[in-house]
Structures are given as C-alpha cells and as structure tokens.
Amino acid sequence: MSFDDIKNVSKILMEYLPNTLKLFFFTLLFSIPLGVIVAWLKKCRFKPVSWLTNIYILIMRGTPLMLQIVAAYYAIPMLVKNARDSGSTGGFIEVLDDFMHSENYMFITLIVAFSLNYAAYFAEIFRGGIESIPVGQYEAAQMLGLTRMQTFFRVILPQVIKRVIPATGNEVIVLVKDTSLATIIAYAEIMLKAKQMMNTYSSIMPLFIAGLFYFVLNAIVTIAFHFLEKHYNYYK
Image 1 (cartoon, rainbow, N blue to C red):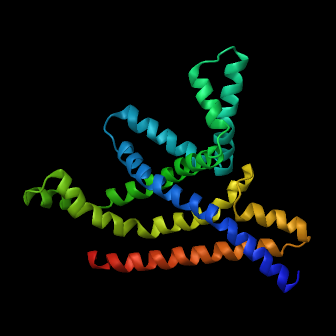
Image 2: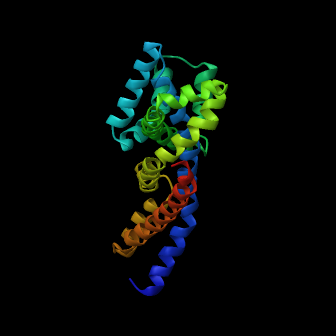
Image 3: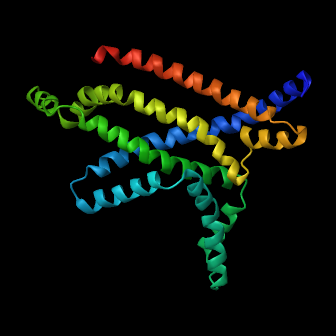
C-alpha cells in the first residue's frame, strides 16, 4: 500500500470510530450500575435470589461473548417466526416485529449483550471490593451515629472505589478490544471496515491501522485510570 492509501484507510476508519466509541460508552453506562445491583443481589440473604444471581454470573462468564451477541441478535427474529408459525399474531408480536426492523435494532441488541456480559464481571469486582472492607468500619460508623446509607456512601464506597480501580481498569481495557466482536453481526465499526478494506487493497495493512486505533484508545483509558488511582491515594 502507498502512503496515500494508508491515509485514505485511516480517514475511513476514523469515520467509523464514533460507532465503536458509542458501543464502548453505552456498555459502560449500563454495565457498571447493573454490576453494582448484581453484586448486592449476590449478597442477598434470600437464598433463591443469590442462587439465581450466581447462575446468571456463571452463564455470562462461562460462555463466549461472541455467542451471547449472536444469541441476543437472533433471539427476537426467532421468537417472532415461531410465534407466527404457531398462528400467534398479537400486538406484542407486532411490536417485536417493528423493533426488529428498526434501524436501532442491531445497536440495542449489542448493548444488551455487552452490558449483561460485563455486568457479571463488574459484579464480582464490586463484591470483592465490598467484602474487603473490615467489619470494624461498619461498627465504627454505627458508633458515630451514621445511618446505613451514610455509612455506605461516606465511609465504605470511597474505599471500595479505590480498591476496585485496578481490576475495573483491566475490564475496561478488555472492553475496548471486545468492541471488535460486534463485527460478527456486521455492525459498522472500525474492525468490520478494516476487514472490508483488507479485501479491497489485498493487504493486511488496514488491520494494522485498526490495531493502532485500539492501541491509542487503550492508552487513553490506561492514562485515565492512572490519574483516577492517584486521585484516590489519600484513602490509604
């Protein structure tokens, strides 16, 4: 490939970068709060809830993300097809059919698959962080007259955040790279376009350029988490 070809490939990949970033940011937006909820459900004293939560985590962590993406993408079409084959034509089926043919269907199913998968990992990270806080911290807060809510947000949460930052940073770095799995259902992101241009130019250079994009993104994430760790150093 000539230098002009490399510039052209880089320009085209840059046009598809926002789609990759959208997938990344929306996954974080939903998976982190969901991970906190799952972590608390796993600690629930009502055994059926904790058992179901453990099963969810086991499935999400024990099966490939690629498989989960494919399952999420084809679940509604198969449901609609089976319902119509059985003679069902209710309003709910029509709603699903309209959603399936909407322009946001692919992106939403990707967000669902990614968020459910990463929430399971974040849940284990957050659970470990919460359980690492000594019981004496809770007892001391109670002696000071703090409510359970005040204890969690003013005493426990800041310490948990500091302890889970390294592990959370690792998962976020993996997420940047995992966005490339969206190519399995032909979502228009940089890896899909790089593969297409690889065939166009009969060269693997577009893949190297795409790899450089992921490298830069992860460098930014690494620097961001480095400053975040320094910010919470005063909780030593």
